[in-house]
Image (tube, rainbow over all chains, first blue to last red; front, top):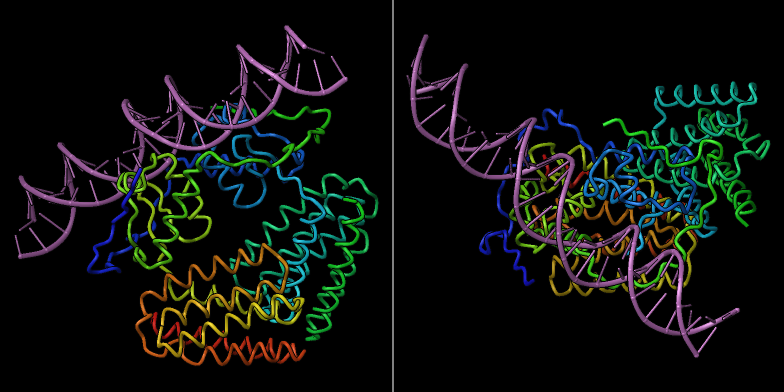
Length: 235
Length: 235
DNA sequence: CCGACGGAGATTGTTCAACAATTACCACCG
DNA sequence: CGGTGGTAATTGTTGAACAATCTCCGTCGG
């Protein structure tokens, strides 16, 4: 049980070692990532309700992977806060509470206005954002609630492209994935994503006009409003 | 090989299931978290140089865990970007490039000034930050380079407490952990963390005085300066 | 001398089977 | 009706096994 873990030579704490020569081929099936992806889809898609227990034996069989591989997938999803791991009890689809809503919006109220205020507005990113607005309008015209919600999430994710940081894009992706968990319990609510489209468009207009402070402040209000609306539905 | 994955009933996509009854005891040893923690220490502490290959067989033996458990730990560390996983080649201690430096600072230039500009300055957080400044000054007086670097990191981590968001605190923790990987290659540089102490103190003074915009802008300049300095050393 | 070729050995990706510890379920009993 | 005990199921972890892949090294040909 006493593991010394003496990998490095005592005389030279930082040994000069050459890293991964070249990140080449990656053909062999990566069961872990595939399993995690399948579960992610199911969870984000609302096919697995929050709180659902994910039995190792059952899911492993359904996904066609071994229990060990599935456990690695669970480890990934747990790090993404998509599932909760309760020791000796199992893995459960995350069940966001009111506290989680506040937590998520506390984060969004920093990074989204930050991206708007300090990001770099490349032509490419802006046109991308406008195309998302267009998709949202089309969805609204078609009365496609799911499409509106989806476009709204893509818009906020797209804001992170202003930062040029993969870290922030990933952080936002995970935040939005957690939000999706809640949406599926209330997506039937008519007009829930109603005027978001116009507010997003207005935000983008301000941003393009160089009125960043106004855009950021507007976004912060928007987020607080959305948070309050969400908290109402979570009680 | 064809896995249907038909857990949920087709008629009721969102099945009502009760979540984890109560997140109670957690006594049984969690080898995975312990192994990940040990490795995290070794990596962040600079005892494992960037690029070092982490052999499953060797590390598993040294940590006293099975190869499967170690793999779960690797999965955690990979999600934290502390190690790189190269398919069929192995796991390597992350080796930040110049691009990674830019990536990290692009993120920090958003969330840190965001926290300063929009966070809530509770008395508790402010005194905490002042105590970190104090520790930094003590370290500087003692000529303790490591202590200064450590206090500097604790300061920037402490800024995230202004946001009240665990997500952002965790994000910053991971960014700083990646930064540490680079520092160990250059920590001997005299005066590398020299005037950071005073700049942090000035930042905190501005924040306390309610001059948030000035504080945020000052922090952004500071971060760009640090980034440039770091990029010099990475070539 | 140098580079292509090839094969043996080591390492990773994944699975399976097993066991102790813990939990869940349920019948029994006061 | 509530506590109690026991059995079955589940999780945490291990060890061994196997195919696929990579690494290394010696050989051969130019």
